[in-house]
Image 1 (cartoon, rainbow over the protein chains, first blue to last red):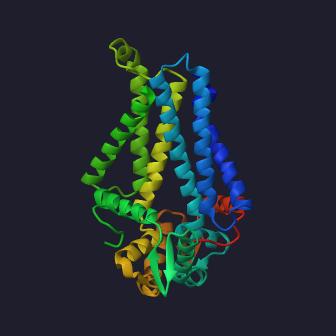
Image 2 (cartoon, each protein chain N blue to C red):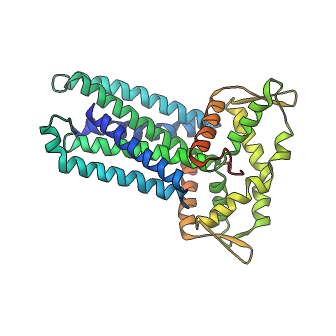
Length: 175
Length: 174
């Protein structure tokens, strides 16, 4: 088992990051999510093709069950790394702590609480988030009311609440 | 298949230890302790394979080969560990987007009025706790009513500012 095959998910992940940067700069300029999900999906497809290619090359040396095991291991590694990268990109785009740090970074002399709140406040957060949920078609606005558009966010939100209850014994940090 | 099975066994072992510690007593710094648990289990697992691998193989128990198999095991385990740690950060803190989606979901088929969020989500709920987090995490300091980034905070802010420029993002986000 060569080093190049052993590190296959890392190479594909590196290519995924480069593709995501190109897509978000030149193709999906208004939706980081679309750029990230598209590059991730292309990377996953490429990984499957490469697994097939390596299977053809080394099938005489490695039992079928082991080949399947390596392929699963590589998929798990790639999906986990891709997930971490989505999270990293998302942090820079949506995390309140990061946005606050960027505001402070741009003001070397520091900022008072009032100055911070004049630049970044609940109204800005709501506007940004509703804008993103509408752009990514997670929700829709009709007649002055919001409706769920896609189930994905609901499933994610309910999963997070269930884990929160299981691990921390509460469903919100305000409890 | 052996490497995948070992990776899953090590991850599940670390997860069980983590849940056990969390049920006994919640640690102060969740992420640091989580990383410590997962990395300790990996180190112990790798050491066990190195020391007992030969004897296990003689007894008919399959073990990962030295070299590339161990490397793949460590890379996969660390990737899954990082994915769990970043998911955990979303569990620790309420994400406004998820809260908003849940509110709309709970409103049912009639939908949720546009102004409902403005009433429920103010600075005290959305901004002040995160400012306090920066102080708690020693990413910022507060002196004479002025917030300033610490050296650690400046490093992290610089990284994200740089990466947003790489992605061609002009607006401020958040």
